[in-house]
Image 1 (cartoon, rainbow, N blue to C red):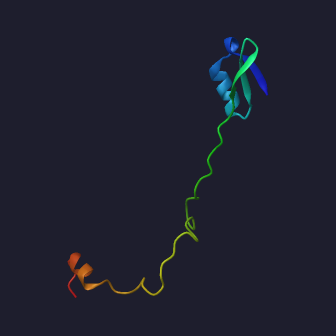
Image 2 (image 1 turned 90 degrees about the vertical axis):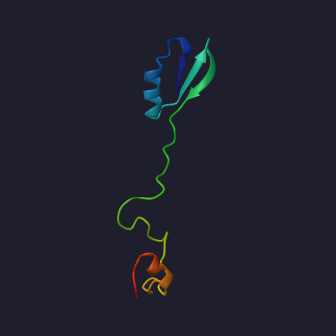
Length: 80
């Protein structure tokens, strides 16, 4: 952990160091006032690509291949 006096602090350099994982204490007249540390990177909710939704969705085997109801077919302009 690094301590830097606020008058000597070069914020752009300190932010780069914090983003790289270093924790920095900013002091005023030698008294610690603030801590600069890296943000935690959020975990992606799911990966992209084939199989990304495996186990998250399901389709009812009984209904998937059933014909559409007549009123829905009519809405699409399909005559029986």
